[in-house]
Length: 88
Image (cartoon, rainbow, N blue to C red):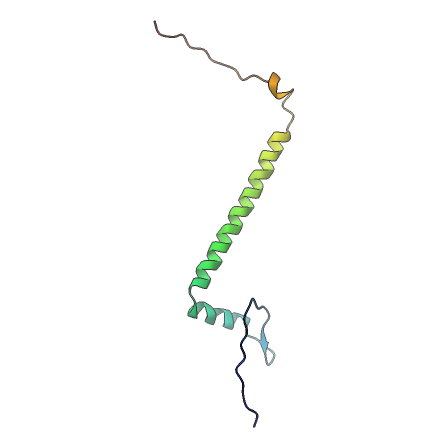
């Protein structure tokens, strides 16, 4: 009979198989149960990625506006000014 040894594995794992069975989801669920902060961390990462994606869209829009032809040099453009009479 062979002696059994415990294996220590750390790091990001995917497609983990034991005796031909994919145990990735089982291991992930067990780690989430033992360390609930993993779930919170994943949520914050997802929120951060969404924020990063939104900021990238805003940068493209702003860059597009900055590059748009507005009909002449910036110094020549004037916005309409409404003047009001001052009270006596």
